[in-house]
Length: 240
Ligand SMILES: Nc1ncnc2c1ncn2[C@@H]1O[C@H](COP(=O)(O)OP(=O)(O)OP(=O)(O)O)[C@@H](O)[C@H]1O
Image (cartoon, rainbow, N blue to C red):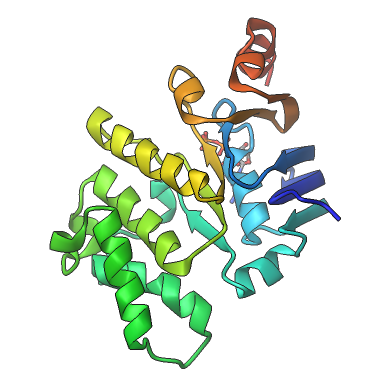
């Protein structure tokens, strides 16, 4: 039995003739924040989508708390904060609607929210500081507020494993600090978080562990180890 929150073995993802991932191996532990690094096109989003079960791997295996992605999603264990480009911000949903999606994931189809669900939505909104904006259309929030809304959706869901795709992109420094503090709190409560980021400088303060990706995992370990110049040269050295 594995104590891992996420286990990825030999994961290969292709889009027609593009190989996005080529035999990636990865372990993410509960109660730890793992930073996922790599240059543009290195496969970070594909890895997160394959763990989520949104993208089907061509080969390899994913386990989330010992389950398939599909079962982990069915049990509402897996929370996802997509990169901004993957969200239709014009969709007519309020911030509260987005956060409430986290509860519907737990209830299954055709079930309405009960008082306890509404309370979970309220407390998630409060925890991320969006109570006052709950009735606003989701696209009418700032970049940092949008990220907080999606994290609140994961909170309402009570997800145990979080996948966050570039949560700091397009977010100002003060919102980044708020997001980091929130993620650190969740991880201290035992949640596992896998967070893709471009911000190498911020990594040591953010992450417990780091993974350097370039279609496969080039290095994994403490942020200090992973950020060693020889590793960065391999990942960012221009050999794509
Ligand atoms: N839906 C798709 N169809 C075709 N190719 C795709 C698709 N999604 C991603 N790719 C390609 O797969 C490779 C990996 O892309 P991916 O988005 O996973 O990388 P990334 O590390 O998240 O990049 P970025 O940092 O730019 O977001 C890239 O070459 C990309 O062009």
